[in-house]
Image (cartoon, rainbow, N blue to C red; front, side, top):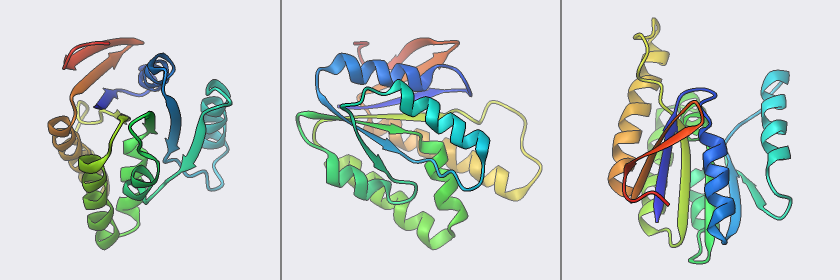
Length: 173
């Protein structure tokens, strides 16, 4: 089963994904897509996520090659928690069009072939104003198209607002 969890910033979507993983009874691999660079605020966010995760969950960092990470770790008896797709999208967009096209295609291939449960967390960014610059507009467009593509591949889709998950597609757990 594949699931997509959408919501705004600080909506509780990561927490919902973590709760689904804990409740699953499956072995969990957390696939992190963030890159820190020299950003102390992002480092603090990553550390907060790390501290919330159970120590027995395995971790794979995949800021670019997300499809390859899914291929490596997907198993029938395992849940993959991908957090988050919009950070991954930012990374591949900034790496150039050729890398973007390749990694986007690899992600879709990997999801189509992945056994087990894959839970993906992503930010809904298309409900605000249209951004002023071309890269920001492309990011919003690509995120919207990615989400629309993924909901066709997912058996369950969640919308999280103020920590309250609503099941948009499929049966809630």
